[in-house]
Image (tube, rainbow, N blue to C red):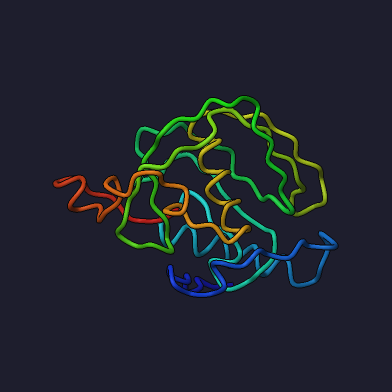
Amino acid sequence: MSVRSVLHMGHPLLLQRAQPIVHVHEPWLPALLQDLRDTMQALDGAGLAAPQIGESVQLVIFGGDFNVRYPDAPPIPPTVLINPVLTPLSDEKELGWEGCLSLPGLRGLVPRYRHLRYQGWDENGTPIDRAVSGFHARVVQHECDHLLGILYPMRMPDLTHFGYQQALFPGQSGADGD
């Protein structure tokens, strides 16, 4: 498999709603999943959505033990999520800094639901139904937004908290990615 190029903000595919995957046993799905995994790992992403590598289908991956961009974040189980459905479990939102492989070098302070339930299927067709909070909930919302044609700056109420990582956080290191 391979590391694929990530589409950047401005590409029209990133603004489109992705198509549902009709059958989780599509013959092309394992190769796409491997490309997503390879690309996310190579770029130190916390997650990656299929539209970001040019495939307009409802598929996201996320999770891992440690991410250099979010060193204080707790681990998230590595997850493949097909045709996700998100349901907020409360109206409570919290602000958090986000980055994205489709907006390299940029960060923004984004409000997200603090508690949510997500449902969908994994690559084997096994149903997933999880209630999560905090950073885990943030990552899921960020990735699933890509399936709706939404990039995180579209969620920001205050663009004074949007800029290049080096200007916002001088002296901090870390790769950029979802």
